[in-house]
Length: 198
Image 1 (cartoon, helix red, strand yellow):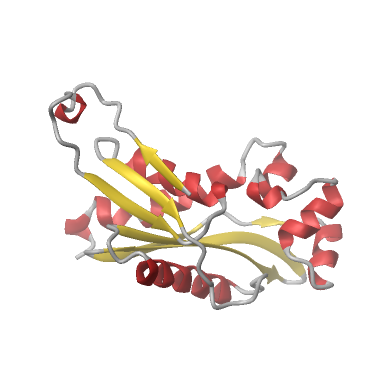
Image 2 (cartoon, rainbow, N blue to C red; image 1 turned 90 degrees about the vertical axis):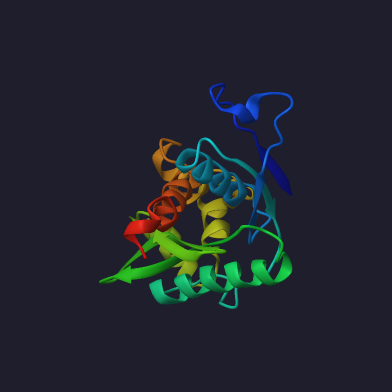
């Protein structure tokens, strides 16, 4: 999957027909269109005057299909980003996005980690977390992945490639893509403010 993000800033010389655009390539460690779009949108919002080509590649996370701790979820995002770099070493950035769950007391919460690797450093950030309904918690504890549990409870098909649990529970006020996008933006702080993060 490839998405080209075009700079529409008319004050930038890159919009002139004879100006050669220096396009930066981003490799997302997943072919899930929600993750690819979230990364594209996050980069474009932080760097509106730059032009990106975004490609999704299928790589292993090195963790369970449904991570059940914060640390396992972060490790999955890191491993995805590293494997994406190994698969496409010619890129400028490699991004791993891993969704997971953990417990607050006896209640299951959901969130995701974003791990970003660039040629000049790294960044990571976690999304907001939210409590899952008991029906979904019970299914996950029985061995289902969150996306599959969502489909059973809400009568959906492949919701993890659409609005996800957060979209289903919020009525799409917040979707999986927008939730991930904010974490991508937060993970880019060291690249946006290089002098402060050295």
